[in-house]
Length: 412
Length: 228
Image 1 (cartoon, chains in turn yellow, purple):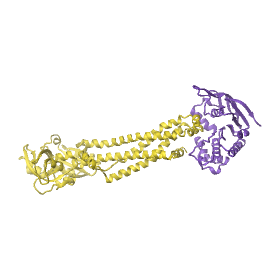
Image 2 (cartoon, one colour):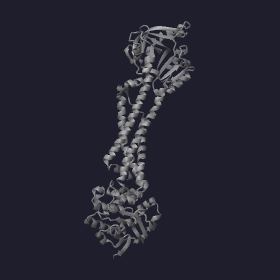
Image 3 (cartoon, chains in turn cyan, purple):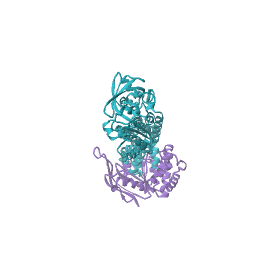
Image 4 (cartoon, chains in turn blue, orange):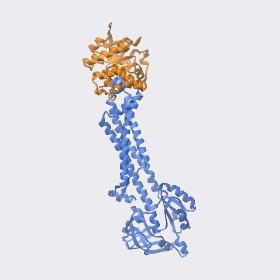
C-alpha cells in the first residue's frame, strides 16, 4: 500500500511531476544521444583510419619500422602472404613495397611515402579505389601510373595525366628518379595522410628499387608491408597474435599499435559517456531535489498525521525515496526509447556535419556522422538515473522524518 | 482499570522567549470504557493535554502513564510504534490520507501493524459498515462529505483495536446532522464494544452526550463532573 500511496502521491501534482519526468527523460535522451554522437565520431575516425590508411593488421620486417629503409624487406614475401591468407578470419591481404622519397612537378616538390601496390588486392584491403575523385584507379595498363591525392595535386599544381617525378634510393643505395603519369586523384578525407602518400603499381616500384645485385625473381617478390583486413574487427587481437606466432622474425601489429591515437580514441568512448552521464545526472539531481522538497513541504501536515497514527520514520523515509524513484522509473523508458529512436535513426541515416566538415576532415573524420551506441550504455544510463533519483530523494526524505508530528499537525 | 493516568503534568511552550504554560499541573485518571469530554475555553490546554496523552508531545514536568507504559521513557520511534498499537486518533480536520480510498485509509494502520491482507480487508469493511459507509468504501476523501470523512477517521482510529480513542474536536467542522450521526456512532461503539473515548471539544452537542466532563481552565483541571 505504501507503493500505491507513493504512486498516487506523484500524480497529485500532475504538472509538476510531468515537468520533472520530462526533464529526466530529456536528460536520458541527451546523455544517450551525445554518447552516440561521440561514439559515432570516434568510430568514424577509427573506421576511416582503418579503411583508408592502416587496415586492421600490418606485417613488417621489424627493422623496416625503425629505419624505414628499402633493404629491410619481408623475406619470402610470397610464402608469408600464403600463410596469412590461410589464417581463418582473414578477409583480404595486400602486399606492398614501400619507400620514402620525393615527388616533384614543375611547380614544387614534397616528401612522400611511395606505396607500390597490387591494384586489385589493394582495393580489397583499402577504400582507395572508391576514394578516386578524378581520373581512374590503378590498372595494369599504361606506363608508370601514379595516384596522388587532391591535396597533393593542388600543392604540386598537377592534374590527371600530368607528369611527376619520383626520387628515392634503391636497394643498392643509389638515388633513382623516374617519371610517372597521374592516373587518378584520390581523397581519403584525412588531409595529413593525403599530403604524404602516393600509390604506384608494385611491379613498377620494384623494378625501380632493384639494384644490379638483385635477381629478377627476387625483385618481383620484393615487399615491405602486408596489410590485412579481417572479417570482424573484434577478432583483430586474436588473429594478430595467431599470425605473430606463425610468422617468427616479423612484426605483426594491429591498427591500435600502428596508430596509438586510435586506441586512445577508442578508450575514450567509455569515459565520454560517463562524463556526459555524470554532468546530466548532476543537473537532474537538483531538479528532483526541488520537486521532492516541494512535495514534502506542501504535505507536512499529512506527514505529521502519518507519523501520529503510527507510520514509523523508516517507512516515511522509504515512501519519499520511492516517490522519487517512481518519477525516475516513469521517465526512464521514455528517455531510453527516445534515445534509442534517435540513435537508430541517425545510425542509419547519419547526420550531415558538412558545415564543420573542413575541420572534421583535417582530423580524418567523415562529414557524415552515424550515431552508434553500445547496448551497455543504456544499462549504465538506467542505473545512473536510478541512483540519481535515490540520491536526490535523500535530503527531502530526511526533511520529512525530522518533522515532529505534533508540530507538523499544527501547520495549516 | 485505569487506561490513562497523568500526574502534575506541565507543558510549557516557548520556554526561552515568552513562556506559555499550556498545562500547569494536570492530574487526571481515565478508566476503561469512559466516554469523556475535555472542555474549556480556547487556550485552556485541551489539545495539548490530548497530545501529551497520545504521546505526540512530551510533558516538561510530571508523569504520563498510558496502558501501564511510561510515555516519557520512550524514544520517538518507540512512541510511533506505541501509538500504532495502543491509541486511535481522530483529528479535527479529519486528516485522512487523500490518495487512499476510505477502505484503504482504514486498512492503512493495520498494514503498519503487518496484519494479514484478508484480516485487514474484512475488518475495514466491518468498521466502515459500522460507521454507515457501506456504499462509500472505494471513494477517496475528496469525494466524501466532512461528516463522512470524519466517520472514516473514526473507523480508521478503531482499526488497530486501540486501548482508547483520542478525538480532538471531532465535530468542529461538522453540521448538526453529521455531528449527531457521529456522536450516535461513537456512543454505540462505547456502549457495545466498550471502547474508551476521550475527546476535547467546546461543542455543546458533544458535551451533552458525554458521561464525564473535565473542564480545563488555564492549564488546570477546574471541574470534573461524572454523570450517571
